[in-house]
Image (cartoon, protein in one colour):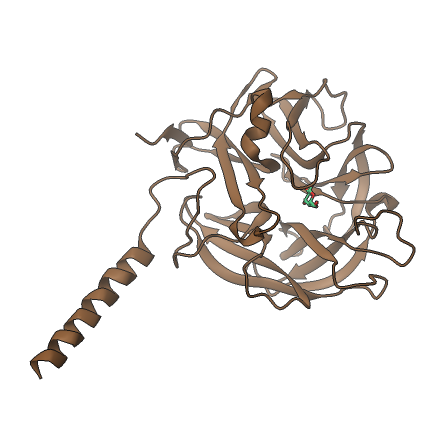
Length: 341
Ligand code: GAL
């Protein structure tokens, strides 16, 4: 009996310690490290996008955990109040092959971005859908070059596919999301034949890509834009697939240009500290504004282990620089950040 009691007590305490470890809060953002969600699992939201609805941030991204059904492609969703501690809200879409024109099962869903439309009260998801077509133009199976659009009544899904199409009738691969301070919503997309990327305005209901605002003739992808103190800063990466390269920035007073030359955002040799741009989050607090550069550190052979490089940038007067990644903390109320001591 005493032994049984002892075993029960050990079991009880290990459960307690276990759940304590799992429920532990993240004190800081650790660039490039494993980032546990509130269940203790590494966050799976690669090539992602973040929106704020009232006081909650939602982070959507490519779900790349190990045990996925290979007949589907998944988008994950996490929620947070402080951009540091994230709760897994489950997969918000499990997409089956959207078009029979995609000839094999190697098709991809990448870089999902979700917008909230205040007029229709719908959440609208854009995603890069790609794969091989019958008369393959490229050998790397990225021939389809379209966006998919899905909608949901709730931030946490489920999202339902509406259609796939080529925005402005152009080939579209990496996509990026930009919402201006006045609430206008834009899609950024890379177009290989044109050797550059587009900034395009979404229609009122966000279901269409309505109007070309600017075409920037520079072969960059992973497009991300932030509007800061009267200037637009556009960042993109070189076209080197999963391998890191020197991400670059250009500025303009207007989204429609003219844009400055593109210059490095990190030391040349660091190749953006091994990461690739995906978007900016601007945190406007009571005391200050922090602009965070969100990037992916890809691990193409073990994608479930791909990491995130989030760093507040040095920004202003046409300069944008990603400082050396080190653990840091953010206060979303004041809008201030500091390195973890
Ligand atoms: C990257 C792109 C990723 C993915 C990858 C495939 O350049 O940003 O989203 O498409 O290429 O090689």
